Image (cartoon, rainbow, N blue to C red; front, side, top):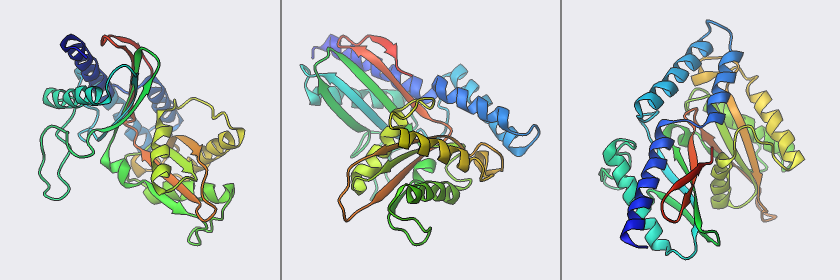
Length: 297
């Protein structure tokens, strides 16, 4: 990778970070507006979603972060296999440092032992890079910024779970999903979106549950059983009356996305990741020369 290519790719990655941090994708904005329209006028839910929409509009107008917590930085990237993994990773880390300096990302990564903040958002595990080489001569870049408030209310269940009466079946899975929503209540900055994995081990379950957030909110699960589960959980969660920010109302969740992994006979995990209304997820196709050709969301 020559210096000109590095410079152009750096600029492209910085722009992807800026757009992700400051502008919600269309599918999320549409879901927030739909939820707002469902709330009773003058209610606390109506007020909360009205403020959220103003926040969305103002952040885009000023090109400033949607939230003071710009969150964990999660990259999912396919890159041309002719390029070296380490070279790609180096450019991404430089982009994170530059975006932090420009204010698109807050200084939000601290040493877990000392509590010291590097001020760059770069350190062990930050940013998180999922890099896969492929045969195409373009980058496919997806970025997710996941705040700490919503991360704190993620939960993993091991079935059977006598506390909630959940067995090793889809009825038990549904109980886990709805229990996760109930336990979150007003925490996690709702209305939220759930990413769920049925099966896997403890690590792959959480990893795949976050990958569900890369799907668009309006998509349809290709598995009819999972599609039905997603629909039912969304409807039933929104009947709990928790509402935006826990203030009460009809919009507790904006979406539920479920994936499945094989598991060991001895284990049956249900992993639930929670995403806040500030669903900062964006992506782009970028040429090997560093030109953004297409936005993915």
